[in-house]
Length: 389
Image 1 (spheres, helix red, strand yellow):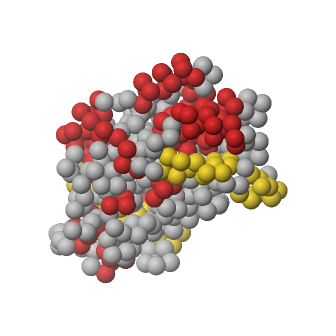
Image 2 (cartoon, rainbow, N blue to C red):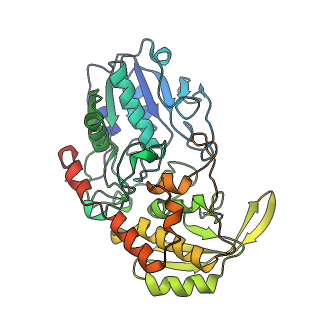
Image 3 (tube, helix red, strand yellow):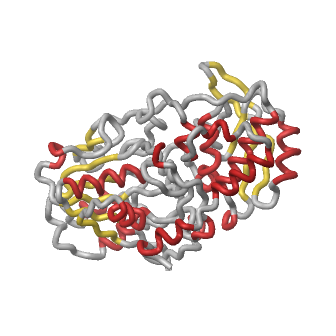
C-alpha cells in the first residue's frame, strides 16, 4: 500500500467544519501523496480556506536560512499569507478575526533544531489561547520512528530558543502529530486539538521506503541523503567550516580551504567506517564575496537504517578541530531569531557551554558525548502519544 499523508486522510472525509473559516499553516513542500499542493487540494475539495500562515523559508520553501520572511499574497490561491518567521512567531488576535479553525500541514526533517516543529508548537498554543479548534495533518518522520534510533542530547531548557523550545532529543523519531499531543499535554495548553493520521507507515520505514519523490522542505535539504546527515552536520554551522550551502551538496559535504584531507581521512576511517564512507570533493564557492576552491569531504551513508548522524557529526567536528588547532574557529550564526548568532553550538546541541566540551581529551570527550546521546527515557515519555506501530 502506498503512503497516505494526513492531508489524504482528511480529503477522504467530509468534516462538519470544512465550511467554517479556516486558517491554514502550510508551505509548498506540503502536498498530497499524488503531489498536489495541500492548500490547493483543500480548496478544490470545498474547504473554506480564508487565510494562510507560513513558517521559516516562506510559503515557497525557498527563503534563505534564518532570513526574515514578510507577509505576502499566495500566487496560487490568491489568499493572504501571514509569516510566522518575521517579527512574530505566533498569530495575534487581529490575525484571527473571524477565524474558526486552525489547520497545520508542514513536512518535518525529524530533527529538533528544524524550526517547523516550533512553529507548530506556537500554532497549538495559539489555538489554546483563543479557544480555536486545531487540526494537525500528520506525516511520517522521514528519519523513521524506531526509538532505538533516538539520539540526544535532551535540550537543557535554560537554552530554550526557536531551534529548541522544549526538552526533546535532537533526533526524536516522532511525528509532528505525536509531538503535538505531547506538547499540548506537557505544556498544559489544553487546546482542542485533533491529529489527522497518515496511513500505511510503519515506524521502521525511512523516507526511501515511501516510494515517492523527495520534495525539498527547505533550500538546503535537497535530497533524503542531506536530511539523513543534517542532525549531525548542522553542528558545523557554529564553526568556520562550510556545510556546502548554495551548492549541490549542502549537508552532504563539509569543507574549508585549510582542510588536511589525508589526516582527516586517516583518523576518521580508523574510528567509524561501517555506516558511512567519505570522498574527497572540492567545491568552487563564494566566500566573503570571493570565488574560492574549497577542499572538502562528501559523506555518503551506507547503512541508513542503523546510521547515527548526531554521533557521526560530533566525532567529525571533534576530529577536525583537533587536527586543525590553528585554523578551526567557533563563530556566531546570526538569524532572524538569534540576531547576534551567539551560543549557536549550545543552542543546537542543547548543552550549556558546549564549546568547552570540545576542549576535553578525545577519550574523556567521547565518554561524555556517548552518555549525552543516550536518552532511553524518551521512549517512555512518548509512549502515551504514539499513533503508529
